[in-house]
Image (cartoon, rainbow, N blue to C red):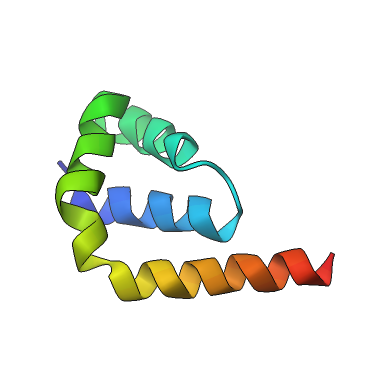
Length: 68
């Protein structure tokens, strides 16, 4: 599985205040895996490696919400 593509799509979903499932669905089409496989990879492994990036993406999403 292409971990970098998965992480990029999920982080984009977080920044855009979308559900993680939407990110999983996007990347699943791109890399030819099921949505469940993408979610499992993220939840069991990648989210721990990307903790700092997740916090930054959440902060960016908060700033976008406050600007509206």
